Length: 352
Image (cartoon, rainbow, N blue to C red; front, side, top):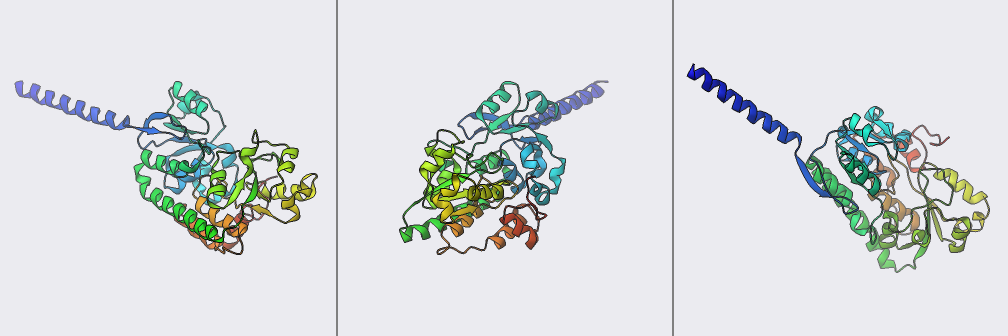
């Protein structure tokens, strides 16, 4: 009888220890500082993540974490390139910009990558793990170029090798291009960016303190005009008054916006139009000009187009290699041609 009680006691202790270990593993957390400086305790290796921030989904997949994603912002999933590049995305939930905590809790989401500080704070107050992922920095975006990638590697250590690879590729692109341009002592030109992930016309841009401002000003020898505007929706009069030397068009509506600039007043009178200095940015899972897997190629692509006498990078070849390496998908020559032209994978315009 005594032996039986001892065996039973040992069994109970073992069960309690195993239960304790299991519980510890489930609630294991890590403290991180997100992209707006908030110190947040989040789960280590979360497996059901809602990606509402514009660019983070691209990096999650590129760094081998696509199976950890529950859903993404709806406008990302509406892009036909998403299923071409990552077919498993058809199973992702489509989220709005500012969803309720109840929805995330009902779906068992263990981390939200939010686009705004107030959204992340509100979710945390409601018991949902959330951090802020931003495309703007203070005093500028210079120290944030690698921040998102590093943040991902902290939360998911398994992604460290891919994160290191990407970081080295970005450093090489920025350094290589800057060294060549600096040797030429070329006067700076002004650049205005038309943000085309939404059809909000020519007067829709990224303001100062942005990733684009840092890339153009610090590495491509340009003067980015975004900081000159009070908001990201400058009027036609404001744009005309600055008369940019170069206009860059990104996003799925880029071709529509180019047509508008060359055909509608008062934009037709801009120097960039008369001098044929209208530059587009390839599309992909997200816009290349965001903090994404394709950011190193964005640097090379813009160097080609801004300084055709200095650079001749084979962007098509680099695109093939980049998506094969990070997304494990091999694009056809036709698909790459369409991607570089801002078109859909079937050769049609992405927008209706």
